[in-house]
Image (cartoon, rainbow, N blue to C red; front, side, top):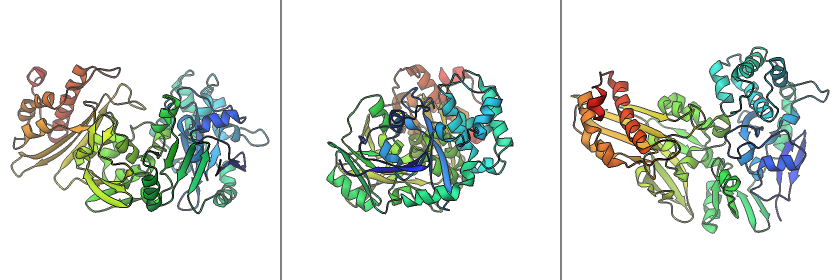
Length: 488
């Protein structure tokens, strides 16, 4: 057993040497006298396990973000501040403003899920929008979308959040920020973390060169960024992951480079950090990203993880396929660039060679005159898996004909994929309702969707066509033919 994890909890630095690297933060907390955080789903969906992590932002201030403790591995919080519901009340027993608002508005639940709500609202309390008085109902709903129990009903919880926002004042964490930052700086590492426990090991390299060397030496290791999927391999599938390589500390993988024609996104950039850039440069994709998981998931999950994981219902890939994204892959320091539409070979199979990893994603920005849109269809608006996700990039020639249409779909096949028969059927055609309706049967050649608990094959096939018609309306406002003419 070598190495240790250091983090701040309860106002002191905690050093853990005797934990398996796949021990979840939730299980460690409950085994060490912190039962306030609960396990509901063990997959990052219900929010009962929500805790808050604090770390140092680029400006030196402490940044607070809500995360799901049930799928977060303990070594992943090295160097951070960990807050649970037990930490919020003052030593004098005075409730934190969030807790007080929950009590005053009768928003407390049965007790099982209330701590998760409180921690989600605590993170919102420390959001910059709350401090500036710019907290909207939309922001409140978004912050609570990952906390699914509503046994008191929505209204009192929302009332508590609105009261908290309206009466926002400094709490004891604001007043102690300088001291908290000092403690966090004292436990920051100046090199990689390696932790072993029996035959299991956890590695957190700092540079992309270190990562390339490490992964080349351990090509069977599991790469993990936010653990929003890998965490479920442990909690739901009971898988043994003997060697973990954590990507979140690799500086180069956390970079976002904004060019005039493209965005370069490091594979370990979280959705939360990516969103402000997308809102400026690619707002259509930003709107989709806000529907990937909930705040707790987006605070941990990464675009690179979504792409490398290759789930057939991964929400980011249809948009990336439509935009013509490519991947920069790294193997032992040797790089190659591969178009995303050549990356997937089959269900959970991709073009990565042993020891090779996704270093960054290159996303071309739509050129002047091009039209792009993407939509997700699911049973719930928030915190749900897609039945179908589609994205389209349209280029017209000077006479209103289709010079190129790129169509990306998720939920329709074993991998996210383009629709080549549809694209070919529309090439050179007028961008009109009649032409699009005539091309729709081509989608039946592109995909043979499956039936599962989310949707039937017939439903998916119909939605895939309807989303193309929606794109036509979105770009032209044209009147559609009758449904009988479109779908037969």
